Image 1 (cartoon, rainbow, N blue to C red):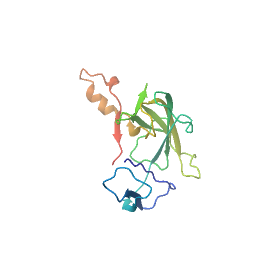
Image 2 (image 1 turned 90 degrees about the horizontal axis):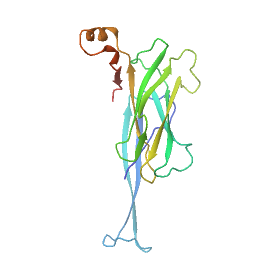
Image 3 (image 1 turned 120 degrees about the vertical axis):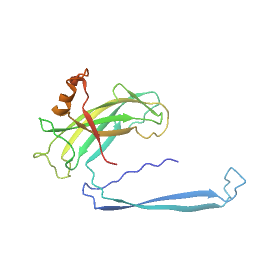
Image 4 (image 1 turned 135 degrees about the vertical axis):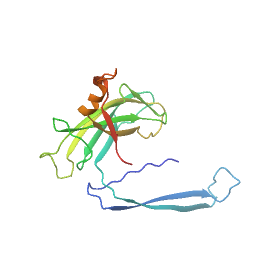
Length: 197
């Protein structure tokens, strides 16, 4: 059994979120018979798990939608995967470009063998800094990207994972250290700064 969950709510979270999973467990009383007959007794019990999430301060909301979001997908058919990143509060640990943008590196990964990511599987999304773009719903910047994916198996599939990293520019001091070496500073990729987990 696989369960996926998400937190629906406003962009203003309290310091502690109380969560609870409740699952109904159904079983027949006759353990010797594999097939449940209409006359068998049924045992229904609840399994409950309570936990707390504290110090929740989301910076980004990530939404993924395949195709048009409504029509069913078939195994082997190519479709689009639209990734939308909404920044809901400022990220103090993120650098800003000269153009007033913050850059996020995204990577789409499916390590369960249910999706094939066709073409590019990673890229950069730019989010402008909030000057006067704060809206009533708390979203202060939106960026998106579209990739091509293919479902490899039939069924109700969980979407591939989307991994976000802060895309940081290299400072000139880091490049100056490399000038004496055979490595070209121009070919050095930018730094990626992961979010704390």
